[in-house]
Image (cartoon, rainbow, N blue to C red; front, side, top):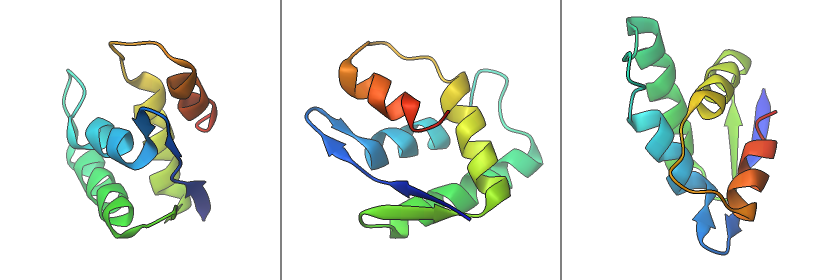
Length: 86
């Protein structure tokens, strides 16, 4: 089980950004198994208030998607967010 604190930084909300990454499949799309993992992660996030707890396999999926995402901006807040997924 992995826990992630859902920080709300100035101009950057972890929960909102993470939901955006997970709900929008990468260019190559999601496989059937990835859809199931994404749904588990999204469900966990939508229920969470200040902290989300992910099963290990779901956490690995979330980390992979965050680290593979492309961003249209650069900021200290984004860098802090990405550091939490190393």
